[in-house]
Length: 195
Image (cartoon, rainbow, N blue to C red; front, top):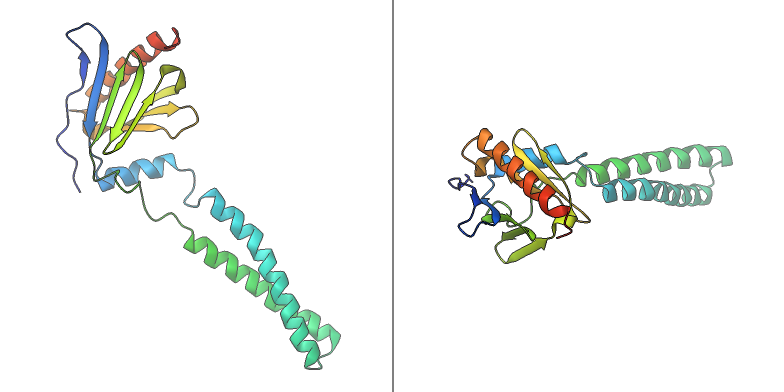
């Protein structure tokens, strides 16, 4: 999927208000690159937690079952302990490895992130972000920071996921940096007034 032609950011409206607008679509390649840059791990925290919690439980369960079977078969106590311990260890390790492998994050982005055009607007009231039927308004006090990376602008949002504006939405990297400087200026101007 390729990106749509870039829209040129608007910076000053005829009525004199500060308004910055940019929109576009992220290509799958761009979405993948930005996601890899933003994520700290290929595994989510829930996967790591459950793999670590369930592997010992499976080990203990296997040790109990194998020990019970071997005792009924008439094996000596020391052999029951050794064999049930080995089977339990193999079961726990196998479960952990299988669970971790199945938990890798394979997909990038949400269902409409690459298919639907995203529109971003900044004005004196804050940020307005929309994609398809989803529309969000964030006041300037909810913005925690604006960061310019090599291939995207990252807007930190309090208690929510960050807003990402990729480089492909701008004519070139210089235009992206100018947009980032403009939005930072607007943020500093209006976040101090509490709007």
